[in-house]
Length: 183
Length: 215
Image (cartoon, rainbow over all chains, first blue to last red; front, side, top):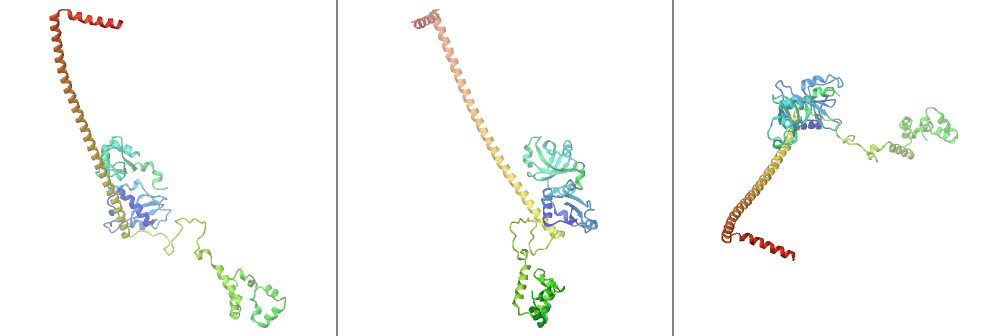
């Protein structure tokens, strides 16, 4: 386990900035004097309290399975891929949101894109190809994706038109159970 | 090679040099063996040689030998000569004078500076996207308005022509009606005046035309 390098940190934050509007809250100091840090182990990036990260130094790299919240994986090409485990953090400071109706929740959780007919409401002024967090109508985050159309264009779209391309959904906890935390 | 025990004593050296079997003996001595392979394993046989130059500094060939040895020490790497026909991956080449290994970002200050840079970049990108989208939307709206205007104009023109046609038709009908009435009146008057002659006249006309065809 190690801290991120300059470039790694930039790629991770760049990806997070697609979905979140306020990144500073991520590293702001907590009330008890502790703060959150980013750590890398087995090419996975973890978002963890500094005190816990310091405790984890006593565990060898191979033996350390996970710590804190896994944000995603750094690929071999140097890109960063967000995992569904990062959803609680993304949902806290989401820049753009889409709420989907009950009839659209199941198709989304099974891995399909969001169609216009399933959208309950969406945040205004959302451009094309911008990261957004998908919520149920009861404000429960279900996953995240990338907008297929801007808000104004999406209004003119027919009901079967795709509004948001799925990136990750809560169904992955079951579907990718084997590879999500190790491997 | 010159360095032998005999050099220490001039007389013995002379005797050794004078005697033809001298060098063979010296070579047989176990201690002096390394002096023969001195050219190859120079640094190993340094101990006996080190003593020799103090007395035999005048001898020029020794200096020449030392220089040769030094020249052998240099390798291509030491000289910094680039190797030919070799592909060095980008990751492998390391800049000279830089610290080895990765530079980690763990302190809050550096993290927050990176964060600020990234956020500013992203904000700019999103803003430009939004502006672009708005501009495109405006253009689309303008085009739509123009198309609607054209459509309306076309419709208005069509209506106008339709009205004109209707009016023309109305006028034509009125004229027709008037004309028909006049003709009827005339026929009635003729009939009253000539009796059944009108029919006869019609038949006569036919006959004439028939006769003309026959001819």
